[in-house]
Amino acid sequence: MKNVKIDSLQPLLIDAPNFMRFMGRYFLTGLVTKPDSAGQPCWAITLSDGSGDLKVFCNSPRLMEQHFQPNSMVHVEAVLQQKHGSAHYRCKNLLPVANTHTIGRDLSALPRSLCPLPIAFDALIFLAGRIENPILRQFLRNVLLKPQIGVRYLQCPASLKYHHNFPGGLIHHSVEIAWDIFGVQDFRPIERDIAVVAALLHDIGKVYTLTPDMTRTAIGSLVDHDQLTLEICAEPLAELDAAAPHIANQLRHAWTCYSPGSRYGFKPKTRVANYLQKSDKSSSERKTGSWPVPDFGDVTDFLRTGTTN
Image (cartoon, rainbow, N blue to C red; front, side, top):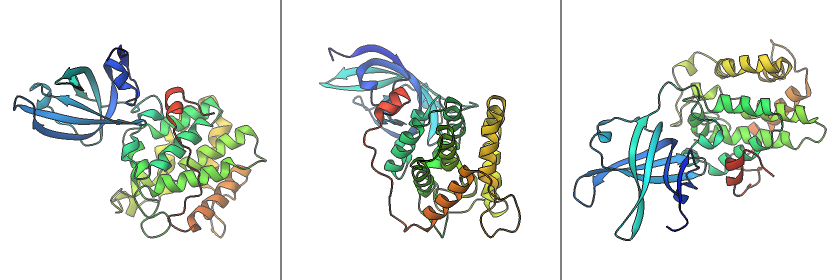
């Protein structure tokens, strides 16, 4: 423990063992009660973020009186303790995080371990890191870091009976399209950024219409997911309007213009919208289980810095 530093605020969980103390907000993805070395009740808590999981322990009766929702965000303060030749983190404070505008400041807050397809999570992180326009980078974060949105985006299927009809199918389908669009050579940089964001979020409304356990929600039986995409993105779109209204309108158009053969709606009028429709169709027709997106390897550097090489 010689090289362990004193403390840290909001470290990635993969980096937390480098500190004697740390404090931050993380997803609580596991909680088991078991006796400690003195035979008293103790919580073994699993914290999760984009870098992985970390076990911390809590035996404070005061803290253990609280109730926590599964996979909810918590504020935690923990201290590294060494006992009987082994080191572990002990909770000094543990509180639920409620009524927040977003669950974190960047995509590193999302829990990788809750994504049924970790490679799809890594692809999301890589693609987000290649978005050059800072306004669009922030817009993507503002949508995916809304409470109850990000985790469902990682877990929901893209459909129940057709393409990508398995838990994690939504992010699988979304990054497939985004990766396809990212490779378009004749896009200008801003077009590519808009197209990648449009692809990653084009079906975000399905987090309201479908569930991770492969059922349709009540609202999903009454409202199409396309309309709910605009609802979910409404507040971030309003903020985007103030900074770059032409970008906000391109996203709206790409998400709402009709597909070939449709009777109503606007025809796709931009290259972004045209490419999105073609890539969406290609991904939807692709054989289930195929994975055309490469393995990006370790994306920890992006989680630390916000950029990819």
